[in-house]
Image 1 (spheres, rainbow, N blue to C red):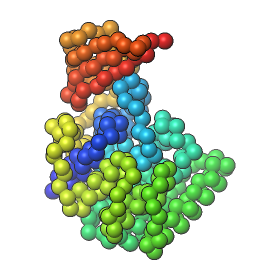
Image 2: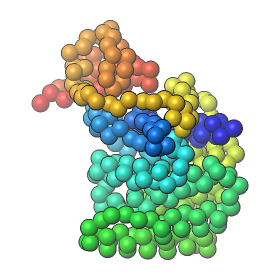
Image 3: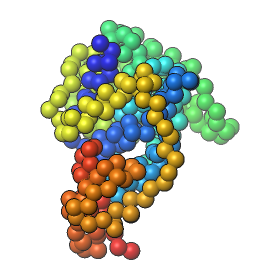
Image 4: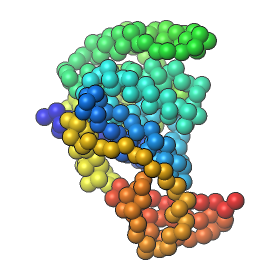
Length: 307
């Protein structure tokens, strides 16, 4: 039963249009390593680095700030809320740097703690009420311990106080509209909309979060989405990671997507990042070489600009 819930939550997060977030969630899944000894699942940072280098050549970064579902594969694969939080905090800081969102670092840190707590609590008890959920995530924010230098700690404490005040407002049903770059408020808006008053979200990042939460509460996953067979297999993979039955090895090589430039149409190779791939087209126009490849995870078009 819980496995089905986990799989539905994962699949539902892909029920959006934006390919950039979907690719980042797939990347997040591929980078997970199960550690049976420590009873946790963590991110292979070497693999993540190369995956994001590849990503830069075939996709654009999300055009919105509400990207918390890049954390969802990591959250769902961990069974312990505290160990999950530790890994989530490390991962969100890497994405903040990658997406160049440093000015919102503390909001992302706090929002990731909120989201991790929310998902784990609902998996354990989907019958939690609105106020109970907000009180629970508020306690997580209050209890969060983090090591920072003196200047950063002052800024973090100010952000924490603001977050607690915002949560209190939502407990009292004093809500705000969705607004770009209001990461914590927008997450609270999603929770409010699910439990109190359904409103339209402003981007696919929030829609992905909303559908993930709804799938835990009641709704089945929509199986009529792009690449459903692969997404379903990755959802099953998440449930196996939770049982530490994959025993995945660390990524200890290095790969460069520019090696694809030497391939020709019809060539088939095993790539360190994309596994078995086939080149389906290759063309050069306006000083840009475009190479389309097909893999188990989908079709990718890499763009290489002539310098």
